[in-house]
Length: 106
Image (tube, rainbow, N blue to C red; front, side, top):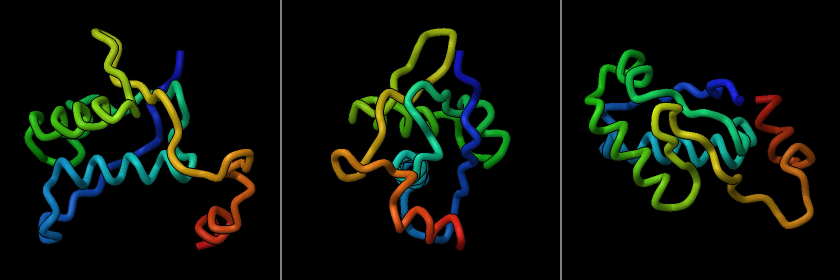
């Protein structure tokens, strides 16, 4: 089965953006850029808590929001998995995107 995705959440406590929204936004960005692919497992709430020192309920709220939007699905006892990608023009591969190349260079 899919391994845990190589996504690390960075929380900016001074940004004025709710912590759970930062997780949602960063997950969506990873989906747009192809860092996360369908079938990838998101870090567990425990892993996110250990890396960011935030409340576990905050992580779960973010994951529920992503699930509500149909981007991820929780599988009892297995974790939370990506269901689909975000963005990209129809028929165009995200890997072929000029923006992706610029971001990779950056």
